[in-house]
Length: 65
Image (tube, rainbow, N blue to C red; front, top):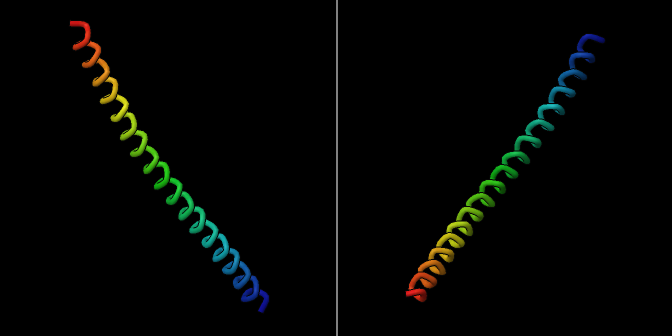
């Protein structure tokens, strides 16, 4: 019976470790998704900044004529 109890204990430890790993992977997936969303937003804001800079350059060029 000791072998069965020991095996049962090991199975419980493995199940607990698997659950922890699953939670960690889920959390990492959420964080990666958040980082991706921030990267998209940053890219869009950078594009807006570039377009604003081009507009200023165009206005500056037009006013210097």
